[in-house]
Length: 150
Image (cartoon, rainbow, N blue to C red; front, side):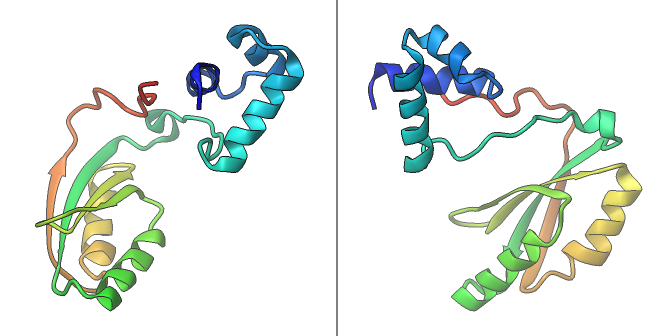
């Protein structure tokens, strides 16, 4: 990956809707070489996809929480069962397995506190292998979806 590839990635991180023509102009390439580079970055897995960033508040999602999860057992079967259950809950917008204790960090978005409480009581606490859940409420998002430094 050279400087031009990094420039392409920086431009696409800033605006994933750029046409190849606009992108080529911004990085100083002609259309065909720029298109080939973008395709190569996509095929190699450097570019994983494109999506719209939505404002949760405009869609009625005004509540965010972080939940730390400790599992009873750390064997492969317990981990797989928990991770499959996590994938079934669309309110979990980010799930990360951690080293040490706790085992997982979950970012959860719901419409309000009662919706979070219902999710917590009915779904999260009933997930396979859960020993302990620890929650904290998000007061304010300072940085979200920051582009990677290139």
